[in-house]
Amino acid sequence: MQPLIETDVEIVVETIEKEVKALVVFNDEVNTFDWVIETLIQVCDHTPQQAEQCTLIIHYKGKCRVKEGEFEDLVPMRNEICRRGISAEIL
Image (cartoon, rainbow, N blue to C red; front, side, top):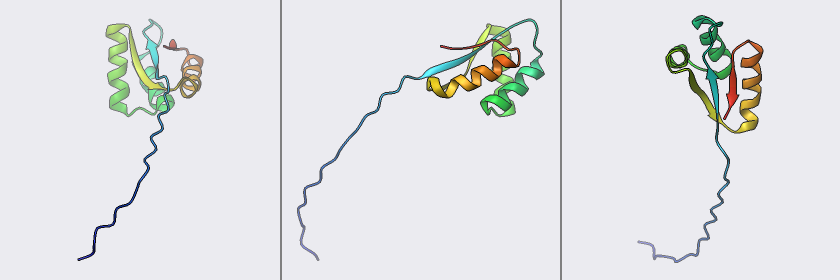
């Protein structure tokens, strides 16, 4: 059996605070379910089931938070969704 050796250990904890934003897609009377689902799959990397559920929420509730993250990460997604004719904002 080896003797116990006491050692000093310094633990450094660094916290980086980042503001989490939400990419919100809004309902309209123009875009089809299939187009919104396809867009969420391609732009937001949703699974087909996740995209379909978000699209139903958008339809019935008027909007849905489809992605969360840092503002800089969400901007290209919002731009592409809007380019496809779907209303979206980062909140």
